[in-house]
Length: 89
Image (cartoon, rainbow, N blue to C red):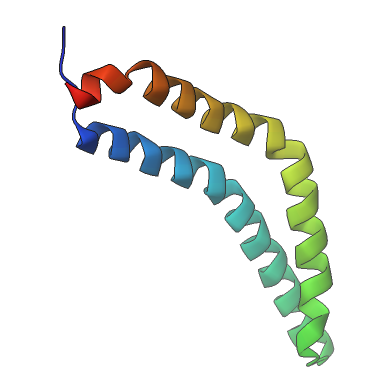
């Protein structure tokens, strides 16, 4: 029986966090960059104009990527709870 450490559990939790959050953050960053370029090109300097497209893009990304993100988190939780006796003992 192999002994797992808390560091292994934390490493996998951090990897799941990065994998789950990165696509959403990249989409928000890309939409913000596109809106910023369009604002610069048209000389529209309204600060609140960038929020609506970013919010819509993030919501769409959450709807599309939600099942994948949920499966990542679920697999981590199942792995942690099934191997809990290895972390304790």
